[in-house]
Each structure stands twice: as structure tokens, then as C-alpha cells.
Length: 462
Image (tube, rainbow, N blue to C red):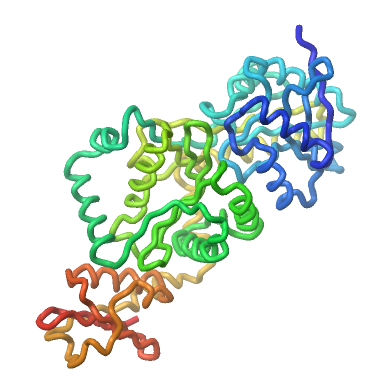
């Protein structure tokens, strides 16, 4: 039987050269297991935690690693162990040569069993398709080793491309749905202004783009709680983009009149593209901008040779609209050498998570997030939306010299609220002309769309 041992490191500089060599040798495709990501995650989320990186050795040679951090619960006399990246990575895993997973996990469990204090070890976001250790962890749970528990956290829809993009698109959606989306694309790209979809390859653009992306993401999720671009998470992502752009990390942006209106940040995982964070300007919901963006991105990554487009962890209606397959993400938790208080705490953790998982599967988490957002904002959304008034105007809206006003551009109204922008965009589409002039009077809180002679115009009051 293969004998494995572990060497524990409590700082990155001491083990980083070994991790880099192992990552290069093992060629594990998971970007969230790479030393660059682990180091960045620890830099921004390591406060109050102790690093516990375990390098696995066979006959003295390093063959794999298990990147943990731990928190000491002094009142219970135990440590809790979590994988680095816990909570802000799509899929987590351990690293070892393929075929060694069961042996590696057995040696790992023996290590925790022999510690002088109790231990609760958590493996979150272990995916049944993308995490190499899923089967070994599931086997350990089914064998009831070390009080093991398993929780089915959520479904993760994905798209598999059997052929090229055109074949997938025709097979996934009927002609009526494709025609409807094509009409929205034409309005977006031909009526509203100068439209551009591109992949960002120059890190020098990040200082300009990221504030726009943060604001857009906040507007997109105003009605719910979503903090993936807040605080330390935003700082981590900014640093990751500056260091990993064009390697494991991609950034796609759609722009209208040079204003970002949608974006997607994604990771490369072998032949799989992981859509990590995606958002669009909610003012364009009428034009299904989220779906338009996905069409462009999936077509682009399919042409680059990717065979899977993964929507990352979690379920949503828009993901189901495109997906033709799914995976599931799980949490495994094990307890070692627990005292009586430690056992009670362990049961409390498991019972709490079991209840949360049940609520998520029943859809209650979305309702809770919605009401939390409403309470946080004092119901401002409803009041602001009801204040938007649209007035139809005849005969060139009484303007004798329309050339005195600037030509229509989305840039003119970008600073207004999403609800006002949405109403204006709706009116621009109704005019069916690209020769609009705009009279924006902030003090009077009006935007007047001035069409060519003989056409109807609109005045939007907000």
C-alpha cells in the first residue's frame, strides 16, 4: 500500500515554489486551485485565520496538496478547517495525481485523526463533474467515516457544444425565439447607437472599466442581495484581473456609444469556460441584453475551441433558458476527535445548513433576499419608477431649430436612474429613427426626444 505523509505550511512564501512545481506537473485545470488564485484569496480574506497548507509527500517527493485555512474555537477546544477560496470560488478541489484520490483522502483523514485537538473539516463547492475528489469524498460519506455529512447545495446549469455554435443555437431554440432575439439585436445595434462587443485584453483599461462594472452590477441586483462586487471581493477581483487577464481570466464587455452596458468575467478550466460574474445595464431589459450578451460570448468561446459553457454555481431562470445539461455542487463535512460540546456544535452546524439548503431548494432564499433589499433601500424603487411619466408629442415637438440640440447618444442619459433610462430607451425605439436630437434639462427633470420633421416625439418627466 502506498504510504503518504503531509507537511504543513503556515505561510505562502515557504510553500509557494513547491505549489508552483506541483501545479505545473499535475496540470489540474481548475483555476481556483492554482497558487496565484489561492495566494490572492488569502491576501484579501486571510484576516483572523491561520493558513494550513498541506503538501502531500510519497517517499519524500511532493505529489499533491490540500490548501486549507483554519479557525480555532477555544471554548470548544477544536479547529475548523476550510479550503482556501471557500465562499468565493466556483468549484473547489484538492490536487494529487489522478487515481490517487482515495489513498490521498485516507491519509488526509488520518492526519486530522491524529491531531491533539478536535477538528471539523469542511469541503464546500465540490462539484460532481469538475472536482476530481468528488467521488472519493462521496465514498467516505457513504461509508459513514468520521461522522461525515453531505449536502446538495445547488444545481449548476451548463451548455455543452456537440458541434459549432450555429448547430447548438438552432437545436436549442426554435425559429420564433431566434427571430425575436434577432430583432432585439438589430434594435440594440442599429437604432440606439454605436454598439460594440469585445474581449478586453489590455489590463490598462481596468482602471476605467471596473468602476462602470461595479456600478452596473449594483444596478442590476438592486432588487436582491448580491455582494460579489463589494468590499474585499471587489478588491480581490480587481487584483486578479490585473495579474491573470488573458491567462486563466477573461473579461468581455458590450458598449453603446463607448459606455459599458454589459460585462462577463470568466475563468478558463481546460475546455470549459466558467461564467464567474455577469451583469448588464437593467435599462436594457426590454431588449433582453443579458441574452444578447450570452449569444455573443458563447459564440466567441465556441469558436476558440471550448466545448462547455458553465454558468458557475447556482441556478437561475436565464441559465435554464440556455442550458442543455447540469451538474451539482455539494458540501462535505467531517468531524474528528470531537468532545461532547464539539459534537453538539457539529450537529448544530449541520442542522442549520440542512435548513438553509431546504429553503434554497424551495426558492425561499430569493424571496428573503428580495425583502432584505427592499428594507435596505426603504422601497425607493417603487416610488422612483412611479414618478416616470411619458408624454407623446406631435409636430416635431414645437422645435424650430432641432440642429441646436445634440444628437441622440446613450452617453447623454447615462447618469440618470435605470428606471428613467429604461423609459427613454423605450421611447427611442418607438421613434424608429436614428436622427433624434435630445433636449435634456436636469433642473426641470425632463428629457425631450426631438425627431425629424413630421414624426412623433416624446417628453419623459422624472
